[in-house]
Structures are given as C-alpha cells and as structure tokens.
Length: 360
Ligand code: V47
Image (cartoon, rainbow, N blue to C red; front, side, top):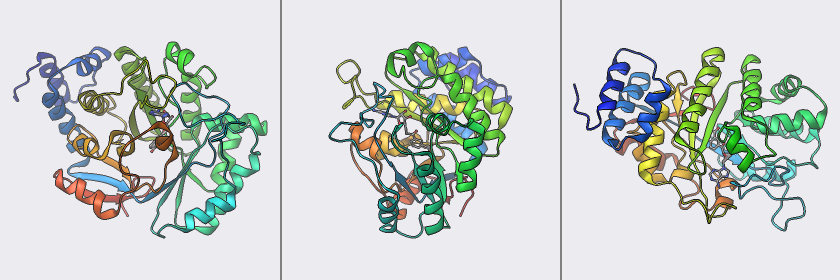
C-alpha cells in the first residue's frame, strides 16, 4: 500500500484497485486534497492502465473563421459585437490561402468561431467542402455544440439535419467547446445568452447517435464551486455511459486577464490545475483521453500534467485566436521535435495521432 498523506485518498485508492466507480463525495475529496503527489499517483495508475506509456499529439491547425458573436459571454475576450473595431470574418478563400502556407502533414483542422449573425448556412458547408477538396488528407474537427444550435436556427433545420449536412460536407468530429460549466446558476451569470448545459448535452448525444464523436471541455477557475465542477464531470460520465461518443475531455483553466471578470477573478494556480487534471482522470472512468491543453496551461505545466493523468498534449497548433484574445502567454506553435521532446523528457512515448486518436 502506497503512503498517502490524506486518508481520503487511501479509500479512493482501494476503490480504484477494485475497479469501483468514484462517487460525488470522492470527487470533492479529490479536489479538496493537498496531497498533490498522492493524487498524481492515483491518476497515473489509471492513465497507465489505459494507455501504458503512450502520450498522444496531433499535427494540427486552428481556424477561427470569425470572432463576431451574438452571445458575448463574460469570460470570453474573443467574441466581439458586429460593429467592434476588432471584429473580423474570414472568407473561405482567405482561409484556404492561409492553410496553404503550412506544411502538408497537417492531419486535423480545428474550426471554431463566434455565433455570427451574418454568415449564411452555406458558408459553413462550403468551408468544410472546400478545405476537404484542397486538403483531402485532413480531418475536420469543427463547430461546437453551441455553433451547431446556431446553424440549426439559421437554416431553420433540426440539429440532426444540420449534423447530417456537415458530415456529408466532410466533418469528422466536434470539438469540446461551449460546455463551460453546466450549472445554470453560473451560466445565468457568465453566459446568459448561451444554450443551457442540458441543451449542450442533448446536441452531443445527437452527434454521437449519428456516428459523430466529440470532445468535451470544462471551463473552471471563475465563479463555480467544487460541487459544480464535479456535477459537470458526472453529467459527462452519465452521457458517456449511454453513447460512448466522447473521445477526450479537456479541462480549461479560465484566463481572466482580458475578460470582463479580470478585476474579480485571479488566474488559477499550478497546484489547482494539476488537481483538476487528476480529478478529471479519476472521475471520468469512461472517457478514454484526457488532454493537457498547453495553449492555456503553458507548456511547462502541460508537460507536468502528463504525471497527473493527461495522456494527450493536443497538437502543434499553428494559429489560435481565442488564446491570443484571452491573454495566454508563451509559445504559439510547436514543431514535431519540440512536442516529442516534452513527452520523452517526462518519461513517456510520443504517439502522433489523427483527430480520432488513431495512431499515424
Ligand atoms: O468554450 C473562452 C474557452 C473554449 C476563455 O476539442 C476560455 O480538442 C479560458 O473548447 N479563458 C474554446 N478559456 C476552446 C475549446 C478547445 C480548446 C482546445 C481543444 C479543444 C478540443 C477544444 O475556450 C470555450 C471557452 O470555454 N474560453 N474564453 C478564457 N478567457
């Protein structure tokens, strides 16, 4: 029996060893513990059982087609109203031109934007089709559940019809954004215009039923309680039991610096980020992958997170605007060599993957 400084972790260790599911209270105890190394040990046990020494990354590129947004959530510094001087909208030609500047080995293109009232439904379908035509080797991970709802309203179609159209146009999977925190109490304060947590989960369910896998995120470190974080994780775990459609979970630390909340909320600490990562690994026993999103965490902490349950370092990321607008510090793009070195020096084996986690 390993030594734990926190007796609650000892009980959780017993459960993990016996493949027992962790409860809501277990989740709270994980977030409340100060035994960081004990927590890392537990998360690593689970991670290594699932993935041995493998740590995944993808050669990818982000496309943020427009920041014009109807929702204007209080945590987000990316979205802008139509008339704002920094508001932008990229044409499909501009996007293809940009993509052509980058190496041909890009496997995944991650496409998200704001809820733009001006772009027509056809823009979204043409965007996917045109990228696929020009770069047949790439997989398109595009549009969060929030954008899918917007497209359904725009086209006067059901979410199911929209997802079918997008799939036909070349969509491989959905990114995990827009989940924020499912708790209504927080959504009312931070993003009253956004779809509810319940609706986000329904759209993810519909995607999974149509054979479109998706990711899931949780934005933490703002006004939410530990209880609300665990409720969020349990809602995802419950849906995953039903659909098995989630590929990956990504905990997103809130970056307050450029948001409306900058005076009220301090950035998360490294200690908190690692606790959140490990807790996610332990609670989400049915979601295979856990991502350390280095763009928000910083490269150094993302590397350390590989010892706290994470088995995916996201990707090389050519350009990403949400973090630029949010004030994320540090690197903007990585080479294959750099990302592999981070993984190897942490004692793991790098595996390049595609958007669906197939090794390439
Ligand atoms: O939903 C916005 C978040 C998300 C801020 O699926 C902020 O592989 C922190 O979902 N501080 C979009 N976070 C990003 C996202 C994502 C990222 C990486 C990989 C994947 C994936 C998905 O960004 C939004 C929101 O929760 N966000 N503003 C901010 N100031």
